[in-house]
Length: 241
Image 1 (tube, one colour):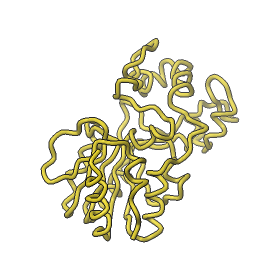
Image 2 (cartoon, one colour; image 1 turned 45 degrees about the horizontal axis):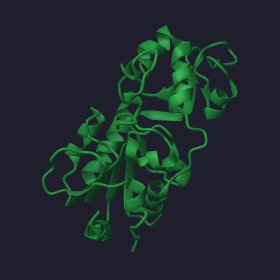
Image 3 (cartoon, one colour; image 1 turned 180 degrees about the horizontal axis):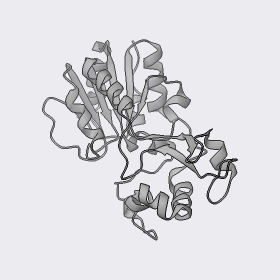
């Protein structure tokens, strides 16, 4: 990695008065949470059914026990802690320089680090509800039970995550679009920009500076600063001046 890449990113952050961050799975891999599309990701492992089905609304309805076995084994990461990327973004928000974190992740690590302006496009494992009575449950309720977690009314508890076959929340998308469209700087990190409709949100950015931090290819985006490196290792070097 060329040291000048970090210096260029530092200059971009120093100029920014209204920065928005758009993050994918690569933001959380340094916290020990596996991604989906890398060579070691979930999509390249063997399961009883394809991961796209295991994380679908159809699987939740048709094979709920199989869904929860996969969900607990591969998606929930009870011991994961925020890494340098999460910490940096929370500090930038406290400094009044960050107007929003738009994330495709469902792990809640941005909030653990202290961020409040978080738009969770795909929901969160921290929120769950009963499909029968609508009662709310935190992550501990899922963790405490084995098999299919159930409400006190007997209904099945469903995680408030966007499964395959489900749509994004309109209010969350609207908030993310508003934050992106008002930003003068955008950092896109840990995503291949191939998951739609979420990845399509970057078209609303019309600011001055765009930086992309990702180990893999994200396609050709004219005028962007590309840094092929781990997100936390890069953002951990950036100072908030």
